[in-house]
Amino acid sequence: MADMTDFRRVADDVRNWGRWGDGDELGTLNFITADKVAEGAGLVKRGKVFPLGVDFGSSGPQGAFHFRQNPTHVMTIDGGDTNTLLEYGPKWLQNPAAGQLAGYFDGNPMRFNDDLIIMPLQAATQWDALSHVYYEDQLYNGFPAKSVTSAGAFHCGIDKVDGKGITSRGVLLDIVRLRGADTYCPLGDPITPTELDDAARSQGVEVRRGDIVLVRTGWWARFLQTGDGAEPGAGLDWTCASWLHDHEVAAVAADNLMVENPASGVDGAFLPMHMLCLRDMGLMLGEYWDLTALAADCAADGVYEFQLIAPPLRVTGAVGSPVNPIAIK
Image 1 (cartoon, rainbow, N blue to C red):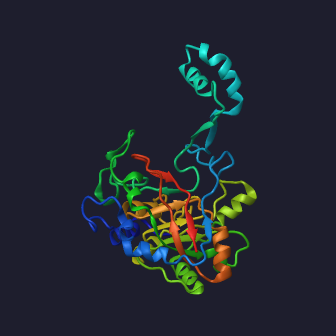
Image 2 (image 1 turned 60 degrees about the vertical axis):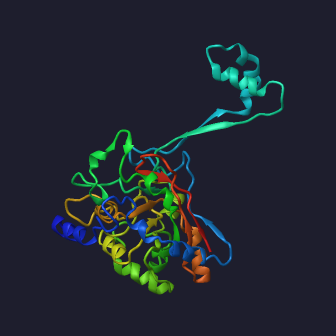
């Protein structure tokens, strides 16, 4: 078990503050150049699309964290409202919306439905913004933690990265296949940097600057079997932060609930890899990605690189965002 002295030594090694200027809020997304975007696009050979997002609904993975619930989807207008609104809407003066809707429906065949959703922005497939995790009162690049208020994140919010598009060469590292696991990698055996190298070597793929690395642990496939969003599984050991830094990876995502291993490898620190990646490196984390179908195709054709497109929603000041990423081969 490492201690905070070990953690601080790694933090000093991987810290990218000032690397792209004192005002930078993109972090390692700066590795995605125009040439890198073109490289990713050039990997499309068959035009086969793999959606990597999961359902946003009441049967989602949330609930274990009491501060984060599954989405609530509500219909605000549906087909059953039409006749009632036509009858009562024009006379319902206390509800101007009812009168307005009745006016839309009266005298013409047009009808419509409308809905809304209430949910945490990190309820299912999502990106962590660089403002999501911090320590010692500082965000990435030294911005003050107090710049994140109840009104949102003034610095390092998810809206700051939208213009980047987040599209690049994607690389899948299939740890389930490497380990020969039936479904997923259970808790108790965290994924090490050596395993990441072994997976790349066995798959015949190289991780390069500006890549977005996807790590398959099998957790999402396990969740679909059990419906237990609280069941932990293996994730990246905290030392993988150094591996990601050394390979100059643009971002990393996994099919589990927190990318890193739930059991901390650093005495006195909860989620040390989150702290190193988001706060020190400026490297975004993606969670709850469904990599099952993509992994099966990669195993079938032996090609573990692809174009990855994963832009966040431009939610002003948000510290995370839903995403519906796609891989194209």
